[in-house]
Image 1 (spheres, helix red, strand yellow):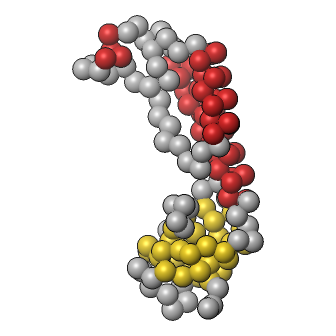
Image 2 (cartoon, helix red, strand yellow; image 1 turned 180 degrees about the horizontal axis):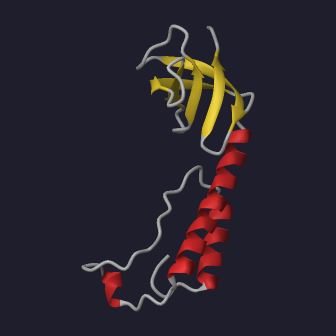
Amino acid sequence: GFPGETEEDFEQLCDFVKEMRFERLGVFQYSHEEDTSAFLQEDNVPEEEKVRRLQGMIDLQNKLSEESNLRDIGKTFEVLIEGFSKRSREQLFGRTSQNKVVIFDKKNYHVGQFIKVKIHKASSATLFGEPVEE
């Protein structure tokens, strides 16, 4: 948001995000900080409204990200292995060339290796798959 943002301004932003269908968005609540050009403008958006709009944008982007990831089920991607999954040392994670996170069983793979992974499940933030032997 920005100082003086109206509900119509926010709705236009939501429409833009829906039209562009971003894979990911960095979304943060506007804060009225000194030494910024916006500081000289009146911050007339109530805190509760800032929080509501922030959550609305996060919810919208989560929905769009999940839709995008669900379209990847059944596809095979080349993945660069980056490390262990946060939930299990028996799984690794890596990223596709589209920067999507993929979780898969560790087997004998190692960090820095490129492997092919077929996607079988997805959430708004993560793809889950099985390595494809070549």
